[in-house]
Length: 221
Image (cartoon, rainbow, N blue to C red):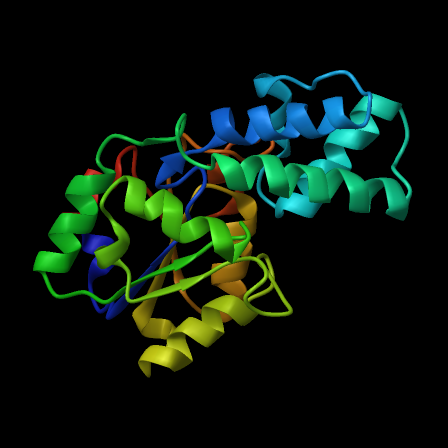
């Protein structure tokens, strides 16, 4: 096992940008929502830089780009509702697992580690995506961005997971691809591990100061 797992009793993963590349599906839904509002599409490249703070912030960024100014709350409500409808109809057909993810999750399960998922994606979309890859049985607990009042980078979701399993934060590891994951993990007292291939608003995730970085999650096992 990877040395960063020494003394670790619970592992928590981010989803988008860490386990799966979901941007192709997210971009289709964003562009469809913009079209509903009579606005020009954003395209996948821009959406890739906007992901990470939940679906409402994603649409706020898309609307601001399309309109040249921040959206009103009414426009954001309509845009977000349209996005949720489009994404909910097809949240996974273009999404793919990153290399090494299945090997890591299989290996951790065989080693007896409890594994949780904490994402800022709305909770309703978690199960369909995991089921599409046959991974729903790998996670003992899944939290979405709307499961609690707070979301990452607030440490509350991670502290909730630690308390759920009765593991002290010092015995927990947060694995993610962005500064929000690392900030949440650090604030919760978790050890942190980053992958460099995900979504971090165009910034190197190493700049966020994780305790470790792996090129592939397969390195964990």
